[in-house]
Length: 243
Image 1 (tube, helix red, strand yellow):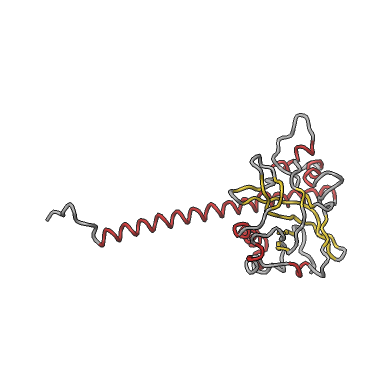
Image 2: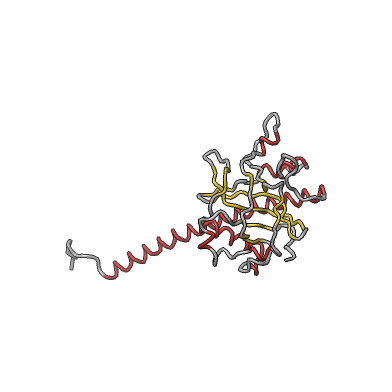
């Protein structure tokens, strides 16, 4: 018997169509997850770990950790020490709406200086220039969690311990200093890196009893973190704070 031209879909045909649509949606969502994970892995690799490797190389060569020296930033100090890889550091890191600037310096507590990589969301101009801090978003917090899980592993859910911590303080940074401008070379050295630094001579002093006192869990505190510039992600790249 031939099917009437006006007949609708059978239940089996509808079920097949729905299954196909579901598979397409699942593939799209999975693809988006893979893209986002790739972006976060890129963030961990460059700038964060590439900055750490350069800083440790600088320490091996000079016996000091990089920070601000005079009017020059830490990337300039490292390049002068022969670490050419700093030219390729993605600072700011820019992927979609997630833009971060990283700064090398020290956090001081009870007279002890801890070398750190400070990470903050930043606004970026159309020319790629980081110009000022911006408020944390929920997507930014996902990057913070990804970094902590990669660095701290099993302690990824405890923000009061480990090398990666979210601090309930606004560590001020100077953003828009181009490394190429600092080098003033002829011909100009090709780099898109910006020599971001902690504003107060590369050192931020913590006046509380311990860093744990000002650590927050971005997940449980995200109602206050999202939309605020008053929090700073910090990576103690050489050692954990003693408290």
